[in-house]
Structures are given as C-alpha cells and as structure tokens.
Image (cartoon, rainbow over all chains, first blue to last red; front, side, top):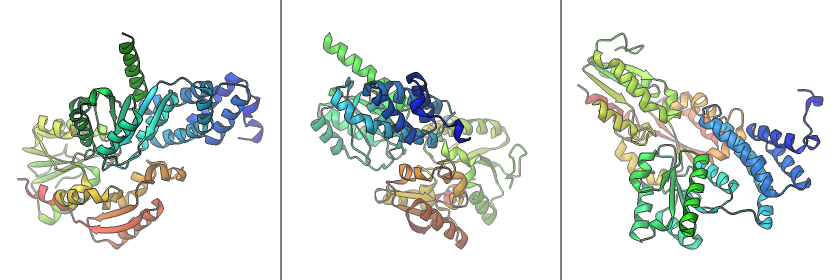
Length: 232
Length: 204
C-alpha cells in the first residue's frame, strides 16, 4: 500500500473512526488503537463511551470470530494487546469520571498451573464491561483465594485452569468455601480449555464459562439476579 | 505391521489407534519387539493443539475400524480432554493409555507425578515435538509472524525439558536451539518410551 492510501485517523469522523478502531483491534494494531483513543478523548468523548463503543465492541467481534474458528489464539492475543494499550489510557480516566460499576471479581489460575492467557482475557473483558477485577495471577493455593475473598469482598470468584491435572483443584477451593460456610456468599465461575459444563456442575461452581465473552455475560446475569433478590 | 491405512487390514489382531505424534515411537517399538499382532493407524498429530476435537475423531475412527479387529487400543492419554476421552473409551469398551499426557507416560506416570510440583514452570518437548518444533509450536502460536507474543505465552516458564525417547545428538541440538528461541534454560532428560512401551507390551 502506498503512503497516499494510508488512513489518517484524525481525519475520520467519529463513526468512521470507531469502525476503523474495530478493524485495528481485529488486526492487533496497538499504536493505532492508542492514537484513536486519544483522538476520541480530545473530541470530548466520555472515557466510558470510548471503552464500550470502540474497544469492547471491537473485542466482541474478535471474540465471536475466535469462537467460530475464523481467528486463532495469536490473533486474539494481538487484539487483546491492542485493547490493553487503549485500556491503559482509559483506566485512570474511568476512575475519575465514575463510570458505572457492574460488580467486583477476584480471579486467579489455580495451584500448580501457570497458564494465564484465558484468565487475562477474561480479566480484561470483565474490566471492559465495568467490573472491578482483582487478579491474583497464577498458581494460587486455596488460602490465596480465601484471603482475597475476605479482603476484597467481591461478588464473583473466577478460577481458571489449563491442565487436566490442575482443574480438580477448583473443587478443593469450593469445598473449603463450603466448609467455612461462605460458599453461597459468592458467585463462582470457572473456565479453562479442558473444562466443560458437566465438570463445573460436578465441582459445585455456579457456571462454567467457555470463553471471555460468555464469562462477561454470565457475570452480568448473576449480578442482575443479585440485584433483583436484594430489591425483592 | 500396517501403518499406512488400517482400512486395508494388516496381519495384526489388534489395532493401535494413535496420535500421529506417537507414530514414529510406536513403529520403533513394534519393529524392535516383533509385535506383528499390532497394526497401527494414526489420527493427525495437530489434534494435539485442539484437544476438544480428539474424542470425536477417536470415536469416528473406532467405529470405522472395530469390525476388522479383535481389539482396538487408543494410544492417547487424556491429552487435555478433561476426562472426556476416558469417558468415551469406557463407553466404547476400548482401552487407552493411562496418564494426563505423553510427557507423563514417556517419563513414566508415577515418576512424572512425583516431579510435577517442582516442574510447573517446565515446557516439555518430545522427540516428535523437537523435530516438528516449527510446525507444532512456533507457527500455531504465531511466533514466526509475531515474536513479540513470546512473553504472553512463556513469561511464566523458566525451563525447557527435552524428554528424549532416543539418543540422537541432532535432536539434542535442535531442542537446545528451541530452548534458546523461547528464552528458557535447557535440560535433556532421557526417558525412552516409558509407559508407552509397557502399555503396548501388555496387549495380546
């Protein structure tokens, strides 16, 4: 492509620019996303609107195409990295402007497992959806989860595992929560490549989430139910 | 021994339905030991990267071949199927290899389990994966096109252990180069064929 064909982001109107951002997210163009986020902010957009209209909507397209086998893990990671660049600009502004808060989640990969790609995607999409996320990282023993539940008082606990050998540890955490009488204080969502719905049910989780988009939708549903129960 | 396509039956009474990543090793074992009662057919090794598809592919292959053999043995471990492959094999009445994955049964499931806690940061290569490092690791992870993704995949890994099924200095060199490319320290560990050999020896 010649220089004349290059798109000048600042010359696009708002609608064109957000559509271009969806394309740039899809192509994993981090610098372009950062530039476009700054342009929208300079034009007076609310940070929350930039997040939802441009970044989350764009990443949702990526998620759907991943689910449908059109995109693969490397492309999703590049898109996530681009979104992360945009989020880094927006995050402090979101805190200042009091964006709507959906709820709070503590999330971590279970003991014996160092894989965090899926967990990181979930964290990012949950933040994008307005959840506060406390990410415990990898290789978490039951004590780490319990300490975080006590100190952070989240609505949701998320656990992730990539290995068949580590996924049973989720049951250890849930059983300990039951023993301590705190299981029903939280919504427990689990995910990871070797898991399935049946496993989620068998270990006593509230839901198995097959990908980040499903995790966000599921978390929103549980939060809505919680609000309804409180209202009732 | 029939390797090319089990739709044309060989002399064997038992069909080994294997992951393509084990073909070389199973052939070596059957040839060395004169196990003429075993035929081999393989599913594509790249199922390794999409474990979700393994049970369906195994079921289809078992149904396709079961009338031609007294017994079918599935040469897969759990391989990331979260117990679904074992459930399927139980339902179909066929046996499979015990263990979570080939890294475990090559080393011997018991030995691997004993080491497991100390090796959560280890990335394993077998002879097959060493030979096919570009095709099965680098390209599917997109590292050929986007080397900057390295940290997103490997930041928490510290070591690469090459589980050597054979003594081949060329493979040792390739595995070392793979470790260097991923930024991991290198260890070569000779395993031989481990529990794969005993599982096949127990057949018929």
